[in-house]
Image (cartoon, rainbow, N blue to C red; front, side, top):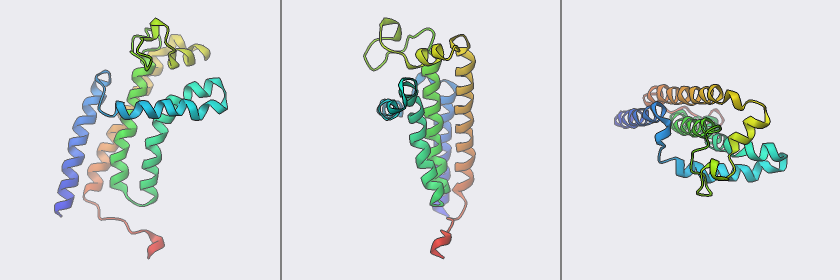
Amino acid sequence: MQTSYLKLIFAVLLTAYFLWIAYDPMQGSFLDLVDLPIHETGHLLFRILGEFMGIAGGSLFQVIFPAVFVGYFVWHYKYYSAAIVLFWVGQSILNVYVYAADAVVMQLVLTSGFTGSEGSFHDWNYMLTSLGLIHHTKSIAGMIRLFGTLTIIAASVLSVYFSFQPPVEDPEEL
């Protein structure tokens, strides 16, 4: 039973931290340093699908990567662990929101060390312009933020719920 309380405490602490990030995604989080190399790897992996997908692949892979771990834990009936990693998925989506929201003003300092307006390439400006949606940046970014926040709320509820659930046996091992 003591383990359940430790899991609950951890879930509550993560809930507080990630809801704080959801409240103000522009402040960033410690996971931003993890998200960046994953994002850049996504560009490399998706570039075989063409220019647009190579550019979109950064943001896509940064969300897909932690989602794969969620899937792994679900596959292995480790629902508490899946819920904990789901916080990372939500944070990563909010990190994408920050980038998408910057598509018009291009003030973020990008990996080149320059802001988008100083000549460095800006993924979301390119994607939204290519799709003819640059004038809808605020709405699109808002939807991304909502989805990230809802993901964090789901992670909060699930991690608290699974704190007290007994481990699920793998049916193949029975």
